[in-house]
Image (tube, rainbow, N blue to C red; front, side, top):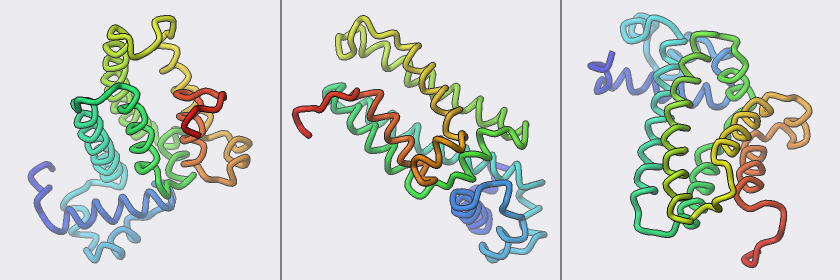
Length: 197
């Protein structure tokens, strides 16, 4: 399928699916809606994708590829680690703008085991890359020595599970982005006011 990536209709399907999945979730969006919104026939859709799950994998891969590229660019910059963290928080905020509760629930709930496994594999790869960077930063003194880096990622995983908790989502009026940002700010900045606030 990678040979199709330069095809305008393939690109249109992927972009349309991204927008629809992001807004309404993967489960709810139909192939018919994707075709209608992208202006392609179902026959064209099936020329590129055997089903909606394979398309969802391409969309999720593209999201992670962009995030990984942006993250690597950030980490290669010659700035203090604290500035990198602030930029990481900003990037996370921008990367979750208008994300729907339905999309988050679909990728984390396991309504489709194949998609959940795929998502988890990509997530593990990304987490390992970030973990390695944090360990290097800790060795250089940019992160306190008494912080267990694995605990940070354990908490991140728990937070990911909590995003599908209806009680938590209700606390934020269904705004998943606000939940993510609350967690990130708590993780990096704690609850004590900072001098710059």
